Length: 376
Image (cartoon, rainbow, N blue to C red):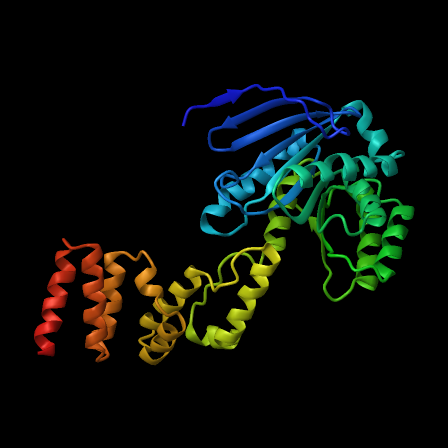
């Protein structure tokens, strides 16, 4: 794919943003990135997932403060893992604040900047892109301290916070977080915040915040403070994004069971169906049991030579083998499992079906002829 860079300028009707779309570029191995100049000494960079244009899917959004430094990290995370369904695709918004204004906007003027963040950035993204209303926030240093103000003032705006080497966890901010957590407001809470053990200047405030979470968090709240012995003030963002997103998306990857016993301990088909129902509703995707989970279960039944369990799965996953684009080798594995367990007719039907797809397959033809003679 050739590197293509297109510079375009269009007028935006959204009056809280500046009026020019200054840049749109497609970078090989990354994808399409838009850049927008905003008022108030800032700009945003917008990454759209690979399948954005080709689908009608709605996507979560990750808002990355200090996008000039950390915008690419969350893109790299999903580019590395989505191909194996270990992470969903998500839109990434890198927020770039003028360095001379950063301290002021994230500190003394944080209340004003919360309004800018919500009404100029989040509202714009929600209006102009296909989002599923799941929002994530990453902040480093002062952007971590600002996150506490954001949570306290707008507790329903962000679903998950990832904070690295945060500074300015002031007592007032921590008290405001505690007040919200004790309130009856229903809010989706996920906090993952990290610190290097060498950052002794922030350790006490982080412990205070953890104590607040321990004493006030509700049953569905998820939070973790990770104190790293190997990171410092500048390396924590990498691990925070990686481990934080991995924890947040822990229910996204297809489940694989490594034994039938493990599957039964999980709760069997009933529990598996309920898991994928919740997964689908949470990520606004299919609620069906994932094809990889079905495959691993069928393969495990063959490996453990449990034909009874295999037959129950075939009944439960009606039509799965026929509709799945299995290799000839795996079709042969299933066929032999059928014939070895006396299900010759099923083996023959499977081989005949495979030959309609791959009529030149000598292996399948030979095996079909072999069991046909035995069946006569």
